[in-house]
Image (tube, rainbow, N blue to C red; front, side, top):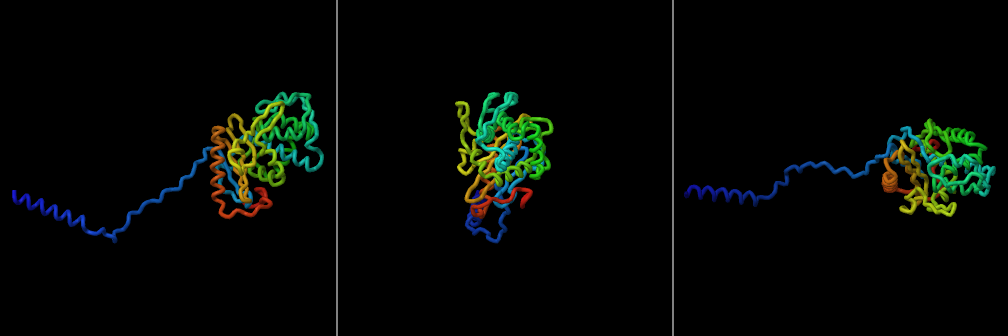
Length: 302
């Protein structure tokens, strides 16, 4: 019994000495892997982000994947209209006679009555704010004489802008065989459009548009959610998903975000907003306010 007590006392003494000894500072510290920084994944089919002020591409996912452009087509349609306005061949105050073809288009519409007259400027607002397909058809017929000729001009202009992977079959973006684009081409188009016609952002940033005693909101829901956002265009077509071209300007820096093929309308806005916020955080030294960089294909980045 006495032997057992001595053993227990000895064990207790050794344990106490061990606990009182200083920590061995010479021991090598354990190596721990740094935690990766959280970054939201992009589920859209393709995406692209550009600092338009410098021409730097900040992010790209499948930028050359072919996809139906949907109503992003209207950016090119408006490009040609603004070009004609600049040439002086047409004016926004011109009254456009709506032909029977406006009643044959489906999807988003202003609900223009065949035989009615509407100012070209109102058609442009309908295209930019409501993504109105009937407005696209009426404007195309007025500018080029008929839709086929207007579409021919669209494809000529697309090639001039370096949109080598794109082809268009109508001015509205309604799904049609052979109508295709890519995120890279939409970036080229969007930057060229904003560079050449910066006044276009006045209609793209309109929160609402009133026509026919109805007031409807802009399809770009981030206009009112983010103060710096001033454009540009939404799109959706069955089989291709939901698209968005988002642009914003802060402290002299303009960012353009392209998101194509999102699974839902809400997803495209969430992912575009995340990409926009990340892009502005990545910009270390914003350039002073002034003229924006050249469109992709003409300057650095693409």
